Image 1: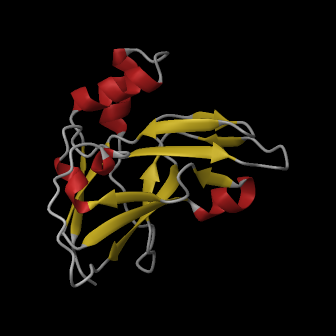
Image 2 (image 1 turned 120 degrees about the vertical axis):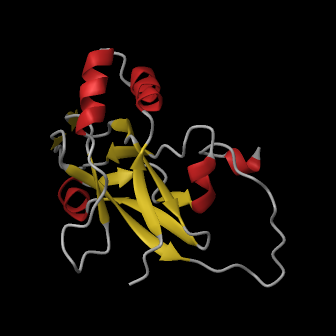
Length: 170
């Protein structure tokens, strides 16, 4: 096994700002408590490929609803690697819980962005069976898998990332 990455928390101020923007119903004290309780992603078993991301707060997601979750997590990884984020398999199977962008792609240079490489996970309950997804704080709801990638022999990309979604096409 190659050891190519390490998870960290974003700063408390970053997490507070992201949570306040997405979930204004929480007080700063609530958010600080959530931050203190954040767990870094980890594998459940020696044979697991995925690193579980844990819910920073409890939420319910009725059918056809979407939620954007600031995880409070960032990841530093070697240059030729990517972290791909998916729903936990059981949630996808039982509820059709899906990533809004089908697969979250966390590039190695995202760690150095102005937003500290804060990983957000946006999911939709696409249940056609009328099932509501209930996730308790601290429960695994998504999983990330590290994959090595290659580039073409004539690749000359030299751009520098600053930001998340769509930042490399601006």
